[in-house]
Amino acid sequence: MSSPVTTARPAAGPGGVIHDIGYRRYAGPRLGRAYATRSLFVHSLRTAYGLGRSTLAKLFPWGILVVLVGIAAIFVAIQSQLPPGVTERVFTYWQFPTQTNVLVLFFCAVAAPELVSRDLRGGVLPLYFSRPLSRADYPVAKFAALVSAVFLLLLVPLLALFLGSAFSQDSMGAVADEFGLFLQGVVVAALTAVLFSAIALLIASLSGRRAVAAALIVGAFILTTPLLLVLQLLAWANATVDGELTGAGEQLFQLSFLASPFTIVEGIGGWLFDPDEPLVGPYGPLYLVVTLAIVATCLLLTLVRYRKVAR
Image (cartoon, rainbow, N blue to C red; front, top):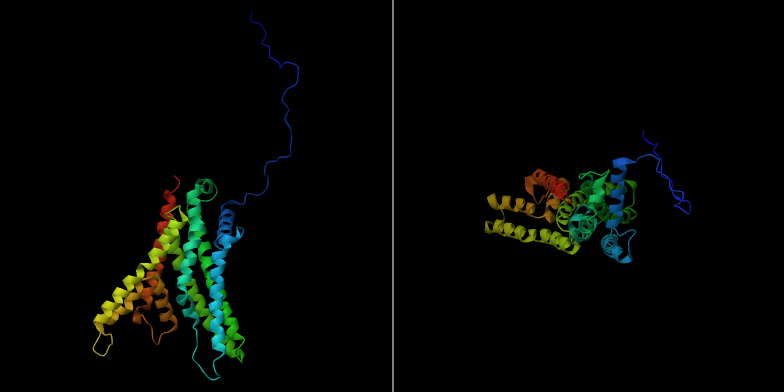
């Protein structure tokens, strides 16, 4: 006959105590993937301008913005000093982004590594990809933030140009015409932001060192300039005695602007807003197609990059 099973009891005396310090399980709504992506976008946009960080981090992006606004103010001041009846313009809205795209390049070279290279070097991508963000949401949010940052960088001086010119007009019809020209600048600014951001983000995603990524971005843009010059020299080598381009030489010159991101958007702007004397001749639609193809290719490669990283 088996004996009854007894349960051991703890010895009398002081034992462990569970303290209730007020922690509760989260019982609110799960905000999900869309909220996480939107939060990453907002945080990245703030990072591009150094908001929420040290004064040194704010110095470069805000310094570039101040320089661009200063250039716009100089243009407006010169335009206002022209005598009445003069129809020539000191500045053209759609050309302003192409005239200052070197500063845009420097901004992208600093902002893009801040957005993605820091995460690569810090090894925090597995935390992002744990949940609920997908591997596609991360680069899309970063790209949208960089495009927004670059677009705002160009939009503010364009607004300064418009406001300075609008107050000097003598009729509402002239202000409306000025606003139409301002919208041309907005279109070119948007194209510049999308193209530069797509290229810069792809290059920055390849290195976890911000200095290396910035150098690669600047180098990738600058190295296209000699190719552009070589193509144009070849075109002028076939010029006539009178110095006019004809035939294959003219076609090569009109297509040479495809060699550099600095001039691709300028070609589109000339085709859209200066049809009387376009630099690219009849190839404006080709420039737009090439721009969209470059952006799509860079985004696709960036998505592929983040499908393989941090695995």
